[in-house]
Image 1 (cartoon, rainbow, N blue to C red):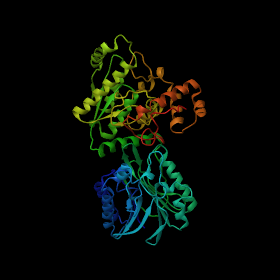
Image 2: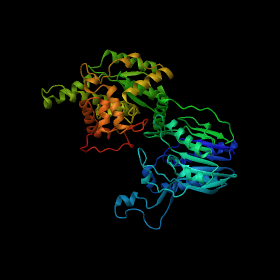
Image 3: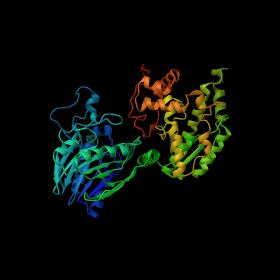
Image 4: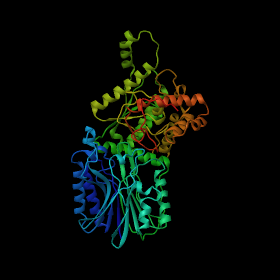
Length: 549
């Protein structure tokens, strides 16, 4: 049997656009002789629609889309990831609270896989294991299914499950194994973080080696706000060997037959995958929101240089504007480095000094400030002037500012609200400082020689006061990044963090900065997620709180 794997990039809520994409892929699959065509989890709605599910008319429109797909299943089987619902006899929500009444739904919703053939629904599977960790919140919206069954198609017993279902030991996958499935299909919307594609492949491969059942793993692809889906779908034979692998970070369609011979496959290494994820995240955020132009404040440091490069590769250099906004504290090295990076990328550099604006505002505040000495107030003032100029340019000429802060800075609040935090996307907000250097090095070696050696060797500096260096204010990044990774990604305890920091005062300083700056993180632009734990919807911490360990 020829099976078409459709690794598509839907847009959340664009039901008509998603429908047209699905129908186009079905048409292509038919022309290629496929007997079965498979689409990822929530292909009709995109992942994840959140409270759109409760919007009046939304699920009715999804049902209409489902029926349209069913009409196009003549002569071909179609497995479709979508939302289904039922209206219970009794309300399932708090009938007194107005928010519950409006957004509780009053309905039972399922994350479903529908199997159509010859314009009929021949099988329905409701996702059983609903994730509610990190970016996931499916238990808030969906009711879990209660059984994992198989369906007969073309003389083959097929088991279907959805994303999280396959990650559990003795879960729905194993139930379908017990029911003598000849083929198991998992449709997914599995978000990317570095090493996730290989982790995912190894997990499924181990299950297949135990079960002896050929398995299809079909993943979504594309950027959705801060979340990136990498695709990297694959098919394994009963020995757990790959028969087919789809592309990473782009739409793809492949035909597979389970009788195919095994092939050798590879996955991107860490920084190659991060590069591709960030480029896709930028590209899709702009495309799906009807944006075209981007603005980057180029400082002469490595962070903004990386953001400019990523924006250029994602959107095209003709759609990027670089603004260089020097002050009296900007070094000649930074001037030179900014010019080199812009030239290497083929981007015109616009220069506007902030000194005049700084002097005017400082003089305006003098009657209030008096002779109080220069401090962080004046440092933040410079950053906010730069933010003002970047946003003014964006308003006047159209476009969106790309925010340039890295994860290390964001974690300890080494940034200025309404200053260097302005923008629509924090492109490298999930990269520690060490990762910024590594990714720049990878780009120089594999994509284009963009970053001069001086960016790698000069001490990082915000250049908001004379002779300022980051490590005058912060612990060395070699220590800071390791402590933060232990704290954020690994959720280590105090004693383990102390072992990493090597000094109690250093650790206490990091923890103090980390906890007291939660209010800043709540006001940040969205951070493109490329690690297991990024700042954003997958990490929910209180602003007001007394725990500091």
